[in-house]
Image (cartoon, rainbow, N blue to C red):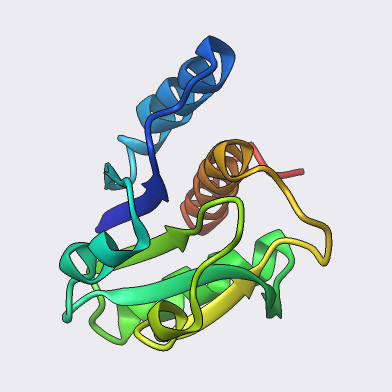
Length: 140
């Protein structure tokens, strides 16, 4: 499976880059992970793959437990999706026109998180989901 994380700009803080690198290393056992960045919202459509199943991360999206997210990812694989994309917006969120290009809206919480930290949170949950699906012991 290929998983793309689409987010605005490069990570500025070293500790965030280290966390992303750690989860990228861990995820390499389960998938090919690509971190794709954009500078302006207008660049988003060119990064979206028509064949991929696309999630927009936004506050009004559906919330899942870790087990439910794992099940969702597994069911998408069974349905023939080998490419998933997760879109993280800038500090002002994702414009509605780009959310509409996604298949599903996903929320981690009704709280707002910095978009750079959201990248790390998403990668940790993707790793957890893959580990759950593989029967691993990471998730307790």
